[in-house]
Image (cartoon, rainbow, N blue to C red; front, side, top):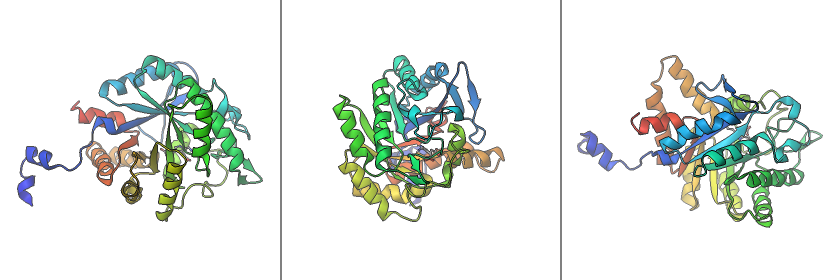
Length: 321
Ligand code: PBG
């Protein structure tokens, strides 16, 4: 076995998987205001940036060959309401950000999350009544949210809310309003994970979240159920699916990839990013090496692409910068 490992060129020649810049999707946090850059404390190296700054960040990513970004809004508590109406304000922060990115970099793919958590005063992805998350009422709002994002120029709608039937409803709404070309990347197998903690800080939903998301996000104990979730979303019209979180769920990713034949993405979530950063800050791990190893593991497990906060860092390393 060691003959094939004996030299660098030979190892590269026999490599079964290769991480490429084109595999990376960069999640970006957007904040209101002008000329703002705020570090996210639980995610070293990640900042929330105002819309005017966004073009600069996206330019850096595009220059490195990153094909797409996904945009998340930081929302102050004064715009969060029980009906999450800001979600479908055509001039909300995400819509402003989409327009800014598309204007400056029309060739960069823009992906938007569809879920109510940034806008809901209960911090949930759906509407809440008497402590219960409402399914069908939520879907109506999600459709309106998807439509304002599509109108702003978003290329890919990414429902991350885990309501039942939302992919089909959003597909219908998009088609009816003339957005046949807007794709859907479904967060199909999304688990109720504690690894989203730093993200909730980043978007300002952590402090307001009442309870947990276990009545709609999946139980980390399950993977047969993930196949059902993915199958349903495909039937409903998803163009691409996602497994989330990533690193702890590579077995799920592999099963999805082996069962279905459409592009499958993994979300290397905030807590996974924070773990490596924290260990590196203590000099316990070599950040660059563990980060590339982790991203390569996604490829080996079958990912067609990876949403990762390390996208720009990884792209620089891959390009030898
Ligand atoms: C919102 C959403 C979450 C993430 C992406 N979209 C958080 C959640 O469901 O609570 C998590 C991303 C991350 O942790 O990096 N629905």
